[in-house]
Length: 98
Picture (cartoon, rainbow, N blue to C red):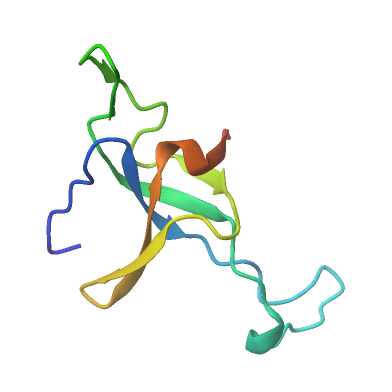
């Protein structure tokens, strides 16, 4: 990414991880039959949510983490011709650990 992007507060910038092009049986899936991926890689993380007492809640994810998120979560943004997803931390369902 040529531009430096830093999400604000509890927002997270993700790059969707595309699903397989074919099934385990070897059948190719056409583009119009594919569902949006719900797995992504964290590109950038904000500083955290501001709590009522004025302190910040540190984000539970960091750049490079693989995560699962809701199918209709966030806002799609285009940066330097690449598509990304900007979501709130609470929309992340799980971190995928290797």
